[in-house]
Image 1 (cartoon, rainbow, N blue to C red):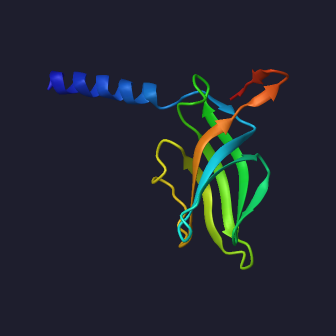
Image 2: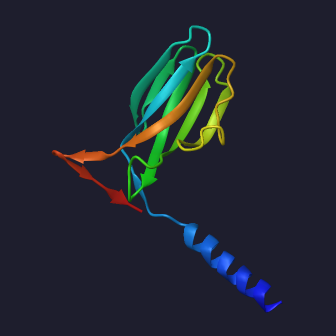
Length: 131
């Protein structure tokens, strides 16, 4: 019984220690889109608050965050994707670059996923706003 209690405490400490990471806000994100009908794959940069038109859908970039230790390790982007004419909401939430299937856009024609965040630039230097 003591062994089980000891293992449980060790396991719980490990899980709690991994639970929170420091993140930094980016100025935007690099997204990749796939048009399933034509087979065209397009990468584009989008800044926070910007909305782009992709065929018959609108992609609104709200926010992009990345782990402070490494901008290339992961990206968390909050996107709102809706129909251009119908205003139907296809997706609203966080997309994660390391797990694109975890929260994916469900659209019959387009796939959209996050590749990485774009850091804030101040002069020639990266400016990090850490939270």
